[in-house]
Image (tube, rainbow, N blue to C red; front, side, top):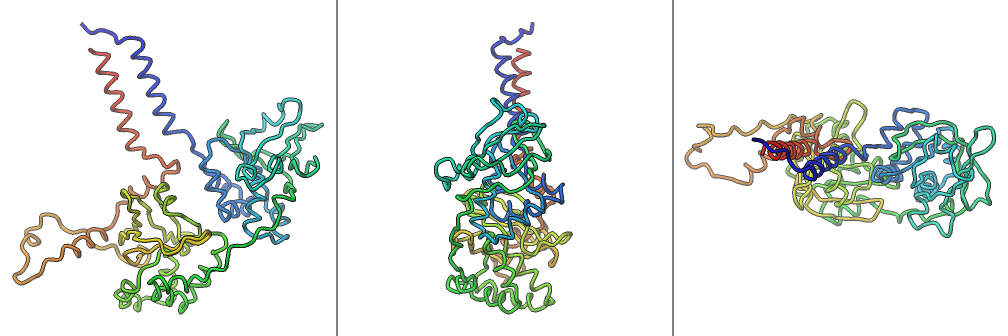
Length: 406
């Protein structure tokens, strides 16, 4: 006769299941995608990415973004702040607490002082990184920086997106003023991209950037953040016969494919596997590759080749240059190499006198096309491997059923 499991065991297993499901569904926000649905905030969205604030926002579990429309951003950009200063100003508009539209009108005592990401970075002194939120007459809500003599610069306009107690994106009327946030910050030291490459064994690649004019695009993205994947001179030399067959436009696309318009440290690449756009990405022309960590190694899968990062040549934010063991070949320009035939009778016996080359075989296997499903899994917005999560859930369910029928 079957015995019902003890209540404590049932409770524990139920709790465990809830925890598993909540782990796979929580922290699902992506500020770039949220704002992409609102074209009138495209400039604000762009500069959240350029200043790296978007990545910091997505990592936080509880956050409120005070979004500025294109008109308000034009007023801010007209002052020609450097990117580091602009980052401080925009970080003042990112609150480290949750404020939905309903909560704004239920503030205790009518006013609240809350910390911003500017304060959290440690760049702000005293209370200058705090934002004053006040419930005003007539249903209006005002916002102002604490170091602005109590002046409320902006008012609440509307809610763009709310996921209760996770993320809230609210439009405010104009930029919050803060002398400390707007204080001049020295721009990054001048970095000569091609000179750095040439000194680190990537002179041939650097020369191609100069010859084609692709160097200009790389330099234009330098202030906002740039990651370069540089093939060595020997790799470029062996690739030149194929390179010369490309049109001028395709040569540029190939070179731009080796750059990403965001600063990505090696640790960041390891922790944020997935599809990554490049400088060559243009609308329907994806020109992307999949970043995947394999133990201590990080690989870049293009569906034509699989390259591995072998060294860091330069790491001085906003620029980082990695050395890779293959020229990156985008599927938009090159055909995927055929997969090696396993257990083929013809392949089993090599012709007499033929030399075995294990390294070539390994390269062919790495260059084989990658299935689309790999991209879809790696590009999961939450960074969660749903397949592994599903296996874990079924294991727990099996355990519950086993205990129940004992």
